[in-house]
Length: 178
Image (cartoon, rainbow, N blue to C red; front, side, top):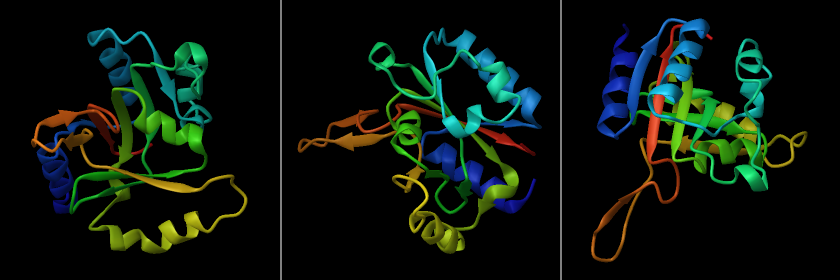
């Protein structure tokens, strides 16, 4: 395991994320299904980008790619990160529309797939990619999401609350290849 990967894992865990190594797609799909079963997850959504990829589209064909009135309170979201930041343990996703961002931020649990080769030292390492994504005119609302562990906030009395502005649990499946 590279020093960059080790640092990413260390920082992600310090931020409260769960990191589970997995060699490839088949194992990742099995881990997601096992996670859903183990945690009694009955409702989940999948990012449109991930659902277009096989075997995810086939294996998770029953999952919606966007929120509907009936699925407004889904328990988990399943996404693939574009990058990981070793310096902070953050995952980065280039959102192509609001529906993709909803998969990251609205469910209580975010399950994120990340390829080891997409881990970079710091955010400045991908500044050109971020600028390129944000300047796109072919997509309706390009945005960049950075998630560092579960969402945290505190009130004026310094009472910490988890999961108010994003997921209360972040699970990163760190894959050798996708």
